[in-house]
Length: 117
Image 1 (cartoon, rainbow, N blue to C red):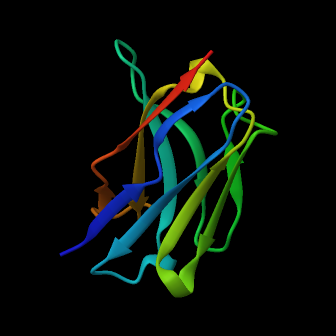
Image 2: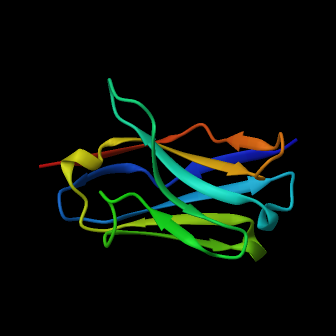
């Protein structure tokens, strides 16, 4: 059974940093593309950053230059380093692992990030 578990969320002040972790079990995570998404209250879930199995990355314009996605395949883990956090970054952050053009698509339970001004 595939499980994704996010951790690292919390309450920080504007300008501070957090590192989110997505730890996978039950699969060879290295072959999956992984995305971080977020959902703020009353808003739709949006993509924040993605990383392919070979390490290519893509970011939402709102986080470019502030967030960095990376992966450690030996640890079956993907990270999201978030710097210079803003109040508008406040949301529940979710990890999504998927294999393109297949049925294999998994989500974690989410971790809350709250940025105070």
